[in-house]
Length: 31
Image (cartoon, rainbow, N blue to C red):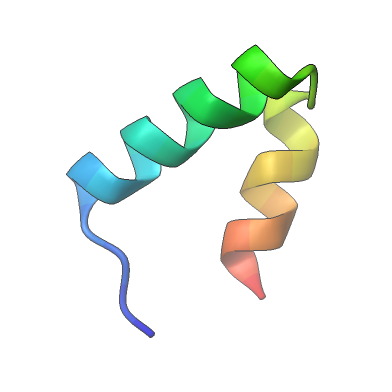
């Protein structure tokens, strides 16, 4: 699945709200 920049920003914001780190989120999106 191809993610748009908006999706990435939204995902990161949700992840941070959930307590996840940006590094982990970036790694998850890179899969």
